[in-house]
Amino acid sequence: MIPQDDNYPETIDSAIRALLASGLEAGREALLEIAYPHRELPRRPGVPKALAARVYLRDHFTCRYCGGRVILTSVMEVLAGVYSDIFPFHRSWKGGLTHPAIISRSAVIDHVDPGAWGGDWLAESNLVTACWPCNSRKGDLTLAQLSWSVQPVNETPWAGLTDLYPALWRTAGRPNPTLHLGWMRCLHLDPQA
Image 1 (cartoon, rainbow, N blue to C red):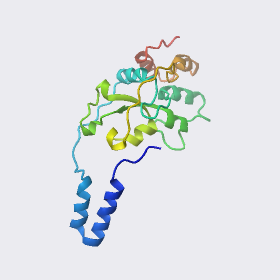
Image 2: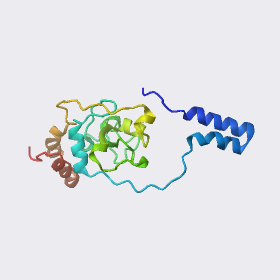
Image 3: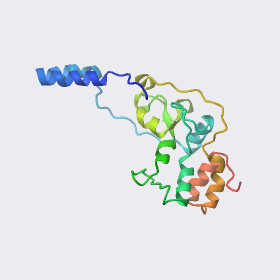
Image 4: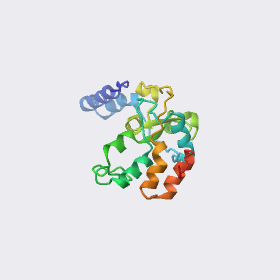
């Protein structure tokens, strides 16, 4: 479990107690310690497949926060097409319609320095492979706020099951060729291999 390294609970507790005991202005004053005024952020650009593939390959499909092995989501999507009754997949990862392995082990791209705090959305040096749970927990928080660090890349043969991707895709009847051939091209995989 990741330790809590912020004072949010204490500050919010103080703000509520001040509000209840002394009124609106006292509550506001206590809450100013963690003030986060509304601000408009530019729309987050999507990470292109080619860039995501480079990051996944660089990081050996390993979460750079927890060290867990991750799998290319598209590989699990193809597997779900073959075994939908026991390995369900929903594009929006809807609860009850998505296997827990997909939610917990899907490879995602995380921005080390969040774009919401000025980090470069598309700089490869600001991108790491993450598992979905770590990415979800991190959100737009900084590593310092979480007391996290980026783990070094370990040399490993793990490739997120992409070595099996072309054969699995062909066996599944070549579903959604635009999506899957795009990923295979970006991962330097031969669809006929």
